Image (cartoon, rainbow, N blue to C red; front, side, top):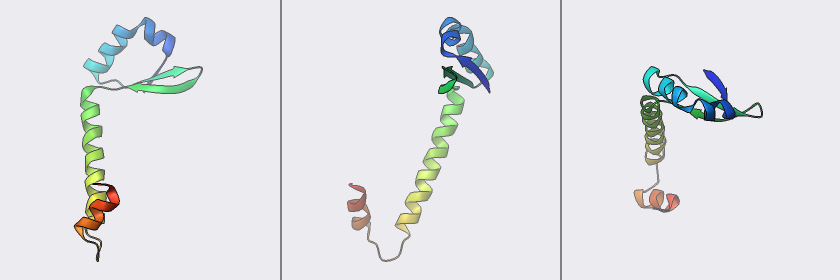
Length: 80
């Protein structure tokens, strides 16, 4: 993964954005030597969203499958 200072990212934003968008490169932005953000492609974002959804669904399935708990109790616990 490429690391770029915030100053360099500001200066070279268009070029960095093209590398992310068209080559799928992931770029970590740093400020004062600390990681502050990451630029990723839309494809990577969609993959991350699908992974998060799968994890959420798996967690929900575990809660729903717990014996002795009604759907109404689960909804109330989650504030729904």
